[in-house]
Length: 296
Length: 308
Image (cartoon, rainbow over all chains, first blue to last red):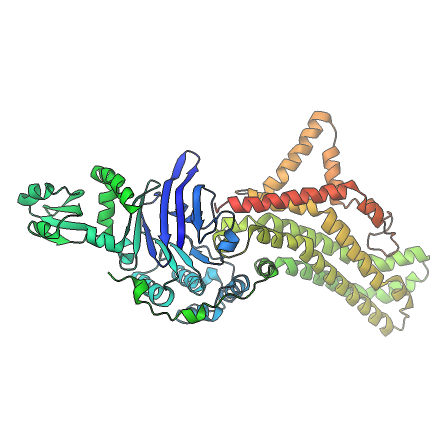
C-alpha cells in the first residue's frame, strides 16, 4: 500500500503559489528526503500531508484524506514541525501523561527509556530546558509512538553535530522497520544521504526530481577534468558544469562510467550538487521535463 | 547502498500489537486535565478568594458575641438579613471571581496555543478540533461553576461552624444561627443559580470570547470588547438610545427575574424558583443557539488557522 499518494496537489496563499501541482507516490517502508531551498514548498507539502492546511487536488495518506480525517490519521502518523512547538509551560512528566492519555499507540516506558539516556530532568518544565534538550524530548515522545508514518521537518535544527549523528543512528536502529515510512526535510542534506531510500527535489512549488537512492547512484556521475579535456567531456552532453580550482566538474545523467573515466576522476555527485544541476541551471530546467516523466 | 529496511531486525514486531479499544472520552478527559495544568488560576483564584474572605470573616468573629446579643433585639427580617449577609457575600465574591477567570481563560484558550505555536504539537496528536474546543468550553461551563459551588459551600460550612464555636465559647445559643442559615437548601439554590445564570444564561459571553480567541491574531481582549462598545456608541450617537447596552447589561446581570421571583439574593432559600418561566424565555434558547454557533465557528477556525 502506498503511504502517501498525491495527484496534482496545489496550494496558493493569495497570489503566492506554494504548491504547483505535486504528484507523488511513496510506498510503505521507504525513507524519503524532501530537499529544496527555503520557500520551495516543503513545509506546505508536509502540512497538507499532515492535515494542517486545506489544499486542491487529490491526496491520500495511509488511505485517508488528511484534511477531513486529521484526528483519525494522527493515530498512525506522528510528526515534528520545523519549529520548537512543545508547550513551554508543561512539565516533562505531564507531557508523558498527556500523550499516554490521548494516544493509543504511545509506549510510555519506551519514551522514558529514551529520556533516561539524556540529561533531561523529569520534573523540569519545557521552558527550563535547552534548545537541544527540547528537541531530544520531542524525539523521545515521537519515537515511542508506534506510527506507520513519521514526518520530520528539520528535526535536528539547533542540535550540535554529535547529537545529529546520534539522532539519525537511533532513527535507523531503534525506530525504523519494514512497515514504517519516514519523510524528512532538512538543510543538512549530506547528513541524511546515507539514511534515505528515496529523495525528492522541490523547487518553487514543484517536484523537479524524484528518485530512489539506487537510481541516484547508478544514474548520476560527476567527472573532474583538466581544461584541455573539457571540450571532449562536453560532447557527452553533461546536465551541469561548474569550475573548481580551474578544473571543470561535469555532471552526467546516464553516462558510461568507462567513457568518463578516460577523461578524469569519476565519482557519484553529492545530493547538493545534483540539486543545483537539476533545479538551478537552464540545462536543469530542460531536464526537469524528462525527469518528471521518468519518475512516474 | 543498503536499504535500511533490509538490514533492520524485526525486533519491533513483538510490540506492534493492535492498540486497545480507545474510548472517545479519554482524549476529552485528558484535554480538560491539560487545561487545568496550564491554567492553574481556574482553581487557585477561587481558592484564594475564598481564603481571603474566610480570613476577613475570622477576624470579624471578634465582634460576634456583641453582634449576636444586639441581634436579639431586631425584628426577624432584619435579624435574618444580618446573619445571612456574609454567606451571600462569599457566594457573590466567588461568582465574580469565576466570571473574571472564565473570561480571561476563554480569551486566551485558543489564542495562546497559536501564539506559542504549541498548536502544532496538539495537532500532531489524535485529538480532533471539536474535542479540543469542547474541552476548553467545558472550563467555563462545567469546571468553574463546580469549583465555585464546592468552594462556596465549603467556605459557608466553615463560617457556620466557626461562628457556632465562637458563640458557644461565649455561652450563647446557636439556635438562631442554625435556623437562619439553612446550608442544605442554600446549597441547592446556589446550584440552581449557578446552572441557570452562570452556565446557561451567560453561555453566549463565553462562546463569543472563545470565538474571538480562535479568530484574533493579536489583542483578543480588544477584539472581543471594542466592537461591542462601538455598537453601543454608534447606537447612542445615531438614535440617542441605549437598547444594545441595556440588553447586554441585562444579560450580564443575570436577567434574574426570568429564573426566580425577584426579591432577596438569588441564593436565598426564600427565593421562589420559576423554572417553567425560565425555560420558556426565548432569550435563553437564542443565547444557547448563539453559543453553539460561536463554538462551531471556533472549531472551524482552529482547523484552518495555523500558528502565526
